[in-house]
Image 1 (cartoon, rainbow, N blue to C red):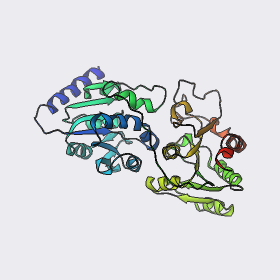
Image 2: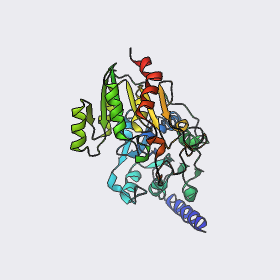
Image 3: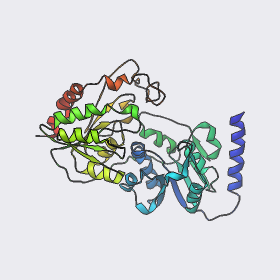
Image 4: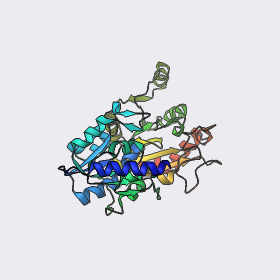
Length: 349
């Protein structure tokens, strides 16, 4: 009954919104994601630009804007301020809808696929809206696609548009200076259950710094004085970045990035760096970057995602994992020995 009622409501809203003759001229892509998922949209975004031309507006989150600036013109990027999001970032208010309206969209392509984007586009007067979302919002779209995982997280966004737009793979050629002996460690992730324990990253840094230049990069979370003192006592270089643009600059100067299944790993891959990822409740098959420069380790336990599962049964630990054993059982020796066997000798001479 709820589905039928919402189908009728959204259908009426779309009919009424398109009645008035307005000048509609622009192509708008809705890509409101965290860092790593923003990069996963690049194959789809590249295909959209090949089809419609480069003058495509991309609406994104403020945090992800510097990521899109690497591949898209800044004057065609519109980031939505954080105070426009409500209810745990699930709903965008009328101010966000006014921003979208100011672009005079002719076509809206939704590469977000959750209630957040539905709340942004449901009353738009665009002539055509297509993309993917939850089934409950299907009548917002002129061409609706449900969530389709495919064989990699990139394919979620490709599958949303391939029935309308030919797919063209994205290849990014970014030339940035390398420091041949610099390793960057990024110990944070999009959510806590994907993070290998911080002290083990520090132990790994202590072991690596005997031979290599190692820096640990922290995001804008608070670093305690006790932790700072511990790092200084062990002569470990560390950096705190307040903004994604600062993180990008740090990654540009390294040769290898070590981290969790996270945005920094995807940024490093985009910039042509070697990466080594530590996986726990997520499946490398669906998240590992493209190319031959990317390696990983994962401790297999009974609840590790199977080959066709993107996340473990606790939704990647977000729904209350009882123990986090997949990461806690992974030792510093495990990580160091895998790094040494597969990567360090290949990169550093």
